[in-house]
Image 1 (tube, rainbow, N blue to C red):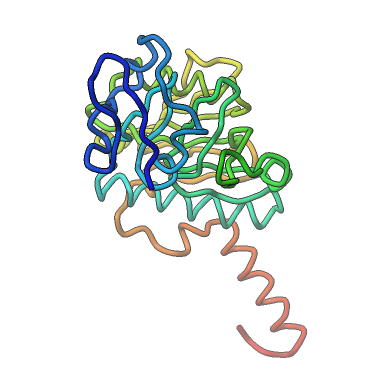
Image 2 (cartoon, helix red, strand yellow):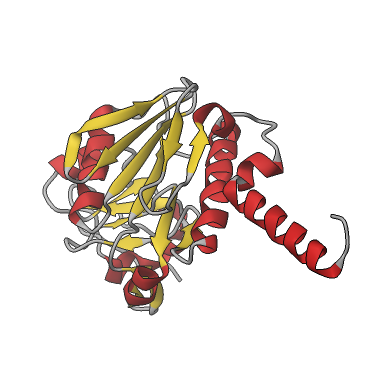
Length: 247
């Protein structure tokens, strides 16, 4: 059953018939308001079941990505996950992986790469229902830049990531087929990667992908796997040679 919460400035409460009626659509608006009434303790069910984040005591609807943005994010997830596992670094996390920040906010990256060491340390039971949340943000966060997103909203979210352990943020601009890479040590100086560029990953040695391939709707499985496919092919040939079988 949903928890009823009095909302300052209104005569109503967030009951089952009114869920979402007082939630915001802009993280920046939440940031500029006095602290709101919501916390992980009293809004845990909403955070678990709805596409919302918690900013400064206010629940804020997440803007939903469209199919092309989701396709690009899926390609990035596949490219990084295979390689991160191959070098025993860690794995990708999909959207709705919740990060509990030091200030009590709860935010959900569109996608992220986390080391197994950090995942083991940071994934802990939190809130009244002991749901597993991350108390440290993943090392690499990937956000899809929607056309309606304001740059100050994106800057606010990056600042929160960087303050809670994230070291790199990829800002994926699908309409313009560009990826901006922000680092915690230079948050105002992103590196821009265009279609003709190769993008690298700080956590996977020798990893690179052509940006054009990331945005290609029909990118091949071999291109997605990259150096992992090469390694598997080489291993297969070596096994075949050892057994006297041509592969």
